[in-house]
Length: 208
Image (cartoon, rainbow, N blue to C red; front, side, top):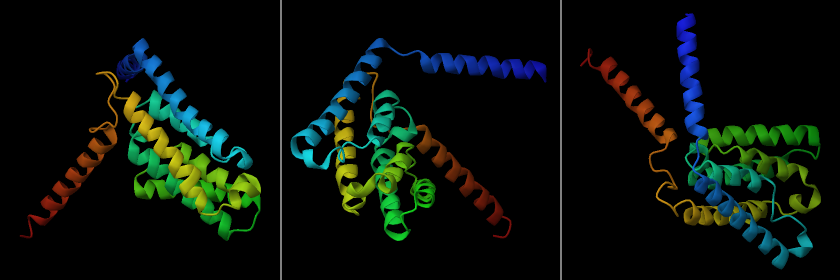
């Protein structure tokens, strides 16, 4: 038991070492991608929407940038999760804001919890989506007065900007590929479906 524990510990150390062994150029392109993505969103905000304060530049985009530009291999950083996760969460947040009374201790947890379930159901899990849902119910009258327009802009429009920038800077070297066609999430789901199909086939074979 003790030997098995030490063996697992050595494996974990090796995995952590490999995961944190990043080419300096990876740091550079992560920085440039995140800078350009947020810069474009902030520029649009400052030029065209000064009266709306910081509505277009929502905080959850900063968290998305960490995934999309800094952890591009992660299943949670793929386009389906980036765009779908934010849109689904925004819909959940706005719906909660429209239906429930304006009581922050009720709407805030309900919006976040509902967004998580919706993302799980649609297979678009993206952690910053929880912040997008929370913003919809906790950012005062400016966001709440937008209603479902909040889903289209700033959420969807901002996600598309981050996605287009990611396509450019995450494919600029041979070691960076985005989106990841063979992500761990897709592989695990295919393996799960394959095993499930095999179990069904084995169960049905004796009766046939």
